[in-house]
Image (cartoon, rainbow, N blue to C red; front, side, top):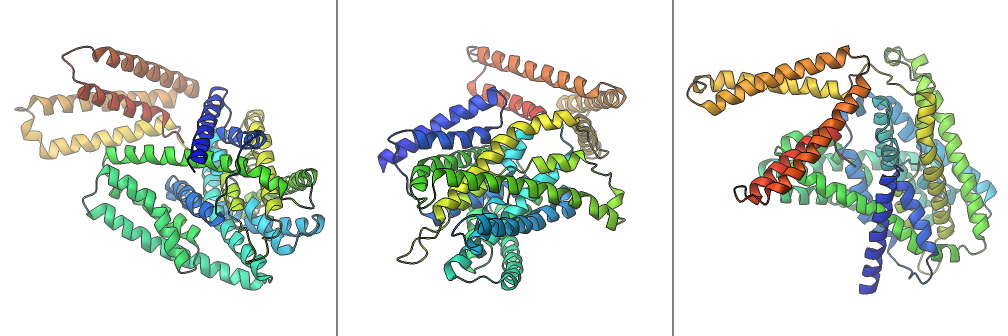
Length: 535
């Protein structure tokens, strides 16, 4: 056990260095993770790590789904609910069905139930992969919202398909009509359990004397509690996690009302999700030799061939679905025509951004080992191998080419949305006015006697005035984007110089380490205003 833990830690250390290399050469780190998983399988002498499939499902999927829900904007999600639903439900079922019948037709010994199982596994695109690939690129807000919302909901819908397919293989029977009816019952009741559980956790956060550390620990526990509670009643644990995560995200401003709590949670969750992504690919690397050895009557060449065929199918199906889904509702619904048309460029990016990732891999690894007490689960190793090939093809091929596609088509913002700097300036002005009104209403009589309050008010008025001037310059400038980038670059350089000065101040006996850390924390907040949350 100690040797295996040391091995995993060593591999994790190596993978982290690969991720740093990916950041240096500006390649999305999930691409390097899938390559690292493949490379690990070729290292001679690597021991095979055995984990219970149910354990993989339980450990990895609830927090991955919860984190995706947490960073989903409910307002944007609801605004674009029609395209999200068409992709998250319609495309998942369409992909699962086509993959099921296709694999049943060209893979010898592959039943229809196994085909639906494979289809359910490879259906959902990965939000982390898409967001990482698109990071730093000028992608319309609508497209990012649809991609993130789709990935959140289709993770839930595809995992329900996966559950039904596993049951069909185990029982030997499959009824589409019965499965469809059960789907809505299981999914609907999973949502109910998720909302009830989220309300309980909301009350604990809101009304009990928690600390930042306790709040962070509770948020880590919440997806597991929601998942297990729903599964206990034989409802959808994934729908419980997604609905609970959306509820907690929407009420977060009421629950986590201190900066230290939010920053602490940000650090905990960013680290945990990153490590989980890395660990899943390490696990597949350690299991891949055994998976290849267990292909049985199929050769490696057969597995690669089937994986490539399935990869082409899922890529083409996404194009066949996305373009009609983007334009048909505009022809049928007057309400849909009120929004600007996505044209051909938006659907092209959404189609090409359908990269598979960690959820598909974790789901494949969670396939049961045994069909019953004496018989192994049929084609388990082949399904996992095909899944890895699909992830490899979509992540590496589509992931590396997507930035070039976006630059080639010269993608512009579709909707009339202010740029980030304008939005920040507007928010800053609104918040500044709230602060001024509060001072005038409650502390006006203290202005003459308290110089600190007077100075704060004057500083606030100057800040509002400066922000208004900056906003006017943004609205009038014809080179706003390049100007904003240069402005942000200057601010980040100043913050870097200020950090160096803080290091020199550590040698000054007048300043304590505690105050220096406080100043550094303020610089961190200023940097966060510019760079945003780094996933």
